[in-house]
Image (cartoon, rainbow, N blue to C red; front, side):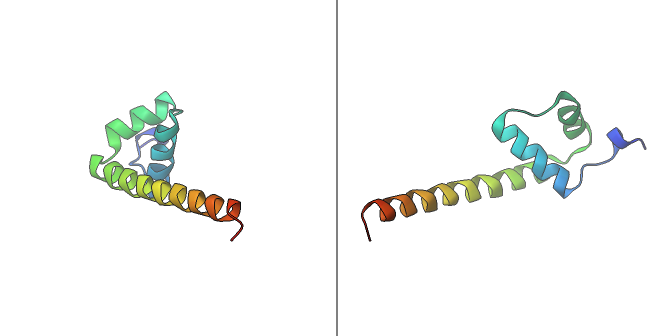
Length: 71
């Protein structure tokens, strides 16, 4: 198997999902993901990263609001 035909690992899957979040996925990586990746893995990683992002934003907003109120 050549490098582009190998099944993507977890790190590659995470980077692909992050790139998809920002809309900067390269065509070669997108082709690799669709040909050799498991849809379930991308769905699970996407849900986890979206949840982390939402809770991260909530934490930042709460921190800014607390800092601006002088507490």
